[in-house]
Image 1 (cartoon, rainbow, N blue to C red):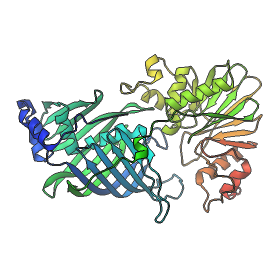
Image 2 (image 1 turned 90 degrees about the horizontal axis):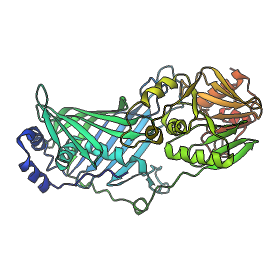
Image 3 (image 1 turned 45 degrees about the vertical axis):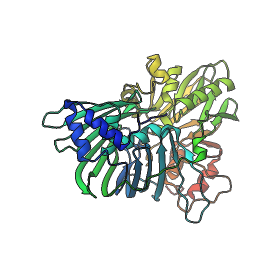
Length: 492
């Protein structure tokens, strides 16, 4: 999705626009001069603080999980509309929640004009990794450029912003980029950009508010810049940064790799592998689903990622078992990568079967506006039908039973479910256990999510022959799970 700065302005053009501003835009003019937005062609800011994993709350009512950030570096070229952000982060452990032992993650992500990509960080001396295009990240990363004080002011001038005075001093400044991306900022009485609000599309939340607050402005080499940046997205924090250094107009040249420049989005591919009579493993990509045939309808387990993926899964289901409608979609948990395609199945007419705590959450967030990228459910104006899982729910046609069980005690999610086919002895689960490649050595420390899954299998008395994980390279057996956990749960 292209999200251009329209137009990209140099310092001369900015000064010309300043001279032509009407009297009611005096606050904008004063802020541009006070923060030297015209003279700030590029910026590098460094800091540390906290980063939060958007869309991965362990419970629908909780904030996004926190990571401690030891290093944050953002290089922004305002005149070219490009940025590079590097983050060193490690997950912070929550009291009473068991998670895998945290390891440091290093992020290196880019945007330049209409393209975005990530560069995988490798160990010293390793083989150079190829850049990975990030087609869906362009709008959000460009919004982050405009959600800096100088970036906001430059974009306000470029997009003919409107101003209105605020009680207590200062002004509200608003404009639209590219015909649909709206920005609203507050400039305080000290001519500082205090708040920037914008909205980005999300498959689960729809038009999602991204709010960035700036405080504690300091002089960095002659340029005022906030020493504290706090950003929220979807109602919860996603960044809390203490800025310790700012450098102006350095070398911020960001070249687009040729393989990224020539890349085009690839349509989702879904492959159907038969696990048992009427049971199919729908794979392809990073997230999988499972198709289960019943007497006069179909049941699909999991609708991950987005509408495009769900449309491909629906098409493959109808191709694999033609002539039967999809009556149920079973959702294992509310993490966005596992729930981003749910609305597409609701539009198809499927009942959404999900843990009880997820139902009020989905009803609430699905009621939000979807003007940036209306999906098929929004366009249809249909409602969604839910069925709660509270302990156990059985979907039966008189011949085949599908059991949906709550997973209890997992540190990954408090509203978590697994699916079990007693006739076929097949278990379907997502995120509790991700099988490794065949012949890979067992981990030195078992993943507590996998240990907990095994505990739940024993608690429920499930006789498992196959595990169709919703991540991972292969279908495995219960023996593979036991090997992965080192039989750590056997004594519990």
